[in-house]
Length: 209
Image (cartoon, rainbow, N blue to C red; front, side, top):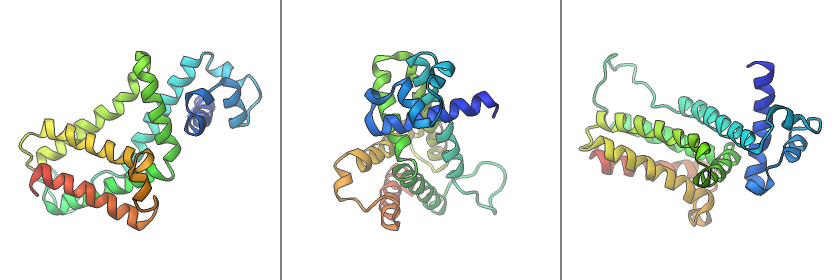
């Protein structure tokens, strides 16, 4: 990153923490300065308007989510040929494990980011210029359609979209919904096992495998 990019990332990370702790009401230029530990006026110098600040947050959320997604992609089978092949039960087992680990990360180390994403999604309902954050879901849907097609789903386009919606709902339920009351503690082996069981059941329902 350049010096400017590094500084904007620092400010966006501070803004994410503020959004997670207090929602949109907590997000001000002065609050970001204080949270980031930079001189008063720094955020305004780099991100002059509130819209520019929120857009920087959205870009940062998309960037960090892509890093996480790449790190938790479906593990490759070293015995598989280079060309695309049908995914079998073992592949779907590995996929469910990877998704469960990713969700558990977004409930723990990435919790602030998840809460900030929800805050930005709600804000985007009223501010179309912020809807770039929805690109995150679009990319996931394309990936899910491809995976379910390889796994033999009857309608991979529709079922891929439905699978992503299920996973999104599972994350929301565990973080801020009723599921948070009785689910295993995030970050524990029991949490990852429980998430994996739900994801694997959904994959089995969509693919029959």
